[in-house]
Image 1 (cartoon, one colour):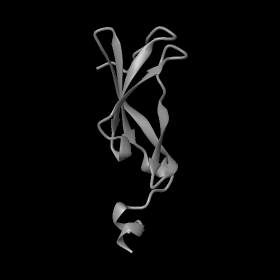
Image 2 (tube, rainbow, N blue to C red):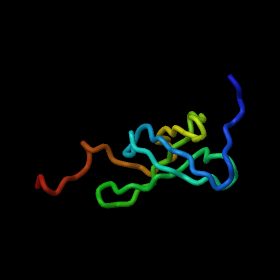
Image 3 (cartoon, one colour):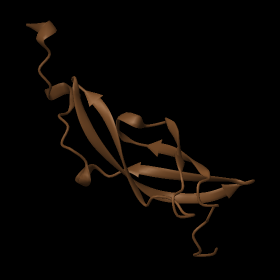
Image 4 (cartoon, helix red, strand yellow):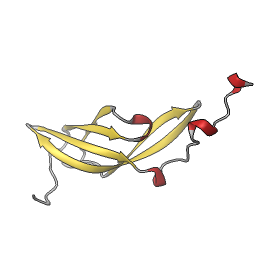
Length: 94
């Protein structure tokens, strides 16, 4: 196995796969600004009507044909705090 980081042409798209957190199982595309991919990205999602920054860290990057695919895992320590769904107040129950 090689330690070299996959690269793409500057301005090329790469595919992002989210593992964990509110974006688990979803995908996105990003544009490479320097021929590589982001080591960490922040996905902004609405949780209880508030925009929340969820941080994901790259765990695996590979070329599939001519397409760069990068898997990102939830980095809860660097993300905005989120209450467990069981601990959230739900006005509908009152």
